[in-house]
Image (cartoon, rainbow, N blue to C red; front, side):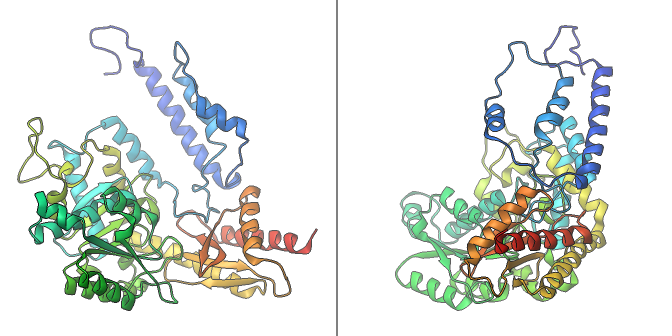
Length: 486
């Protein structure tokens, strides 16, 4: 009901016709906004006064009409975007929203169901969406899991499940045995790991001294020999190695770690093997990636982010485990006000959250079913095709130097004219900042082997050949300007 049944006024009520009119107005605005994005700057810089004004946002004593909200967004918010909706955005791994995902988000808000508890249809839709993600990833049929807010939460859930699994295995679930074992737990990550791994370990109560960062080889993959030496050394002095985190598509360069070799070390020492695949976790679906994903079915858990390569609207991740009870062991709790179903456990038993958005389930399900398996492959190929073009343009120009060309759609390169005597790190940092400010394209920087590089990622279904050419043209134009002294 849009108005109270007893006729009393509510400050939240809208007349049905007014509500419909505002929905229609918003729908037209959204369509116009998305259609016009390619003609707008990728980002616009804001002055400090505007930031302070928005950050204060004092409430009016009497509130404001609903019709003013869209006008406010159009005037004060939309002109200053994150940039990821623009097809010439090559910055962070943040994709634009798939249209069907926008529709699903709206429907989810209207349903406003709690996808943590109950027996409603959305919980079963989530199970289906999770299963589809697991199949695309190449995980075994036993795999299940839960949708999350993103890779950070997915990594936290999976590493926490690893800890519980390990402590259960050694019989140290509580009391002095737990305290003694927990004080010696150690886990391992690559030097190229995403910062969410360290955050997860810190949140679980492990100090930084027991988060081992293992070096990488020249190709930026986890050094398996160094991992084995580190695990062996810890084991010999009485530490308890319990988990290794591999990378499936690092955020810096898109590198995929050697899964079979890491799994063998995990099995030898009785450890859990988790992979952070927030970016590249679904690579096994594309035939060109097959060689990089050998052994993925032997993982214990995997984090994926549909709001990256699948263009599902933010926020959405997934924590996938090959044995669902491992998440339940870590997070299921009983309460008199929660009467769950033993045959169909509530999704809150697999995560920290009791209240969970319906929109997350609907938009993942909708995007997956619009694409189908072939659509996912075609979307990945779209990214790869434009990445090949970018790398070809870099290779053709004498002032550009290709630094990395890993399997995923991330390209690290530099503007490096041969005769220029200045500091290339400072030059490329300046190029990135000036390019962002100009607004015709957007990329970021990342250090690779201790040098600053320009980092361009393709994860936008709207990116075109012209956008890639614009990016290269902008880099060359700014680079020439900075090195000519004019």
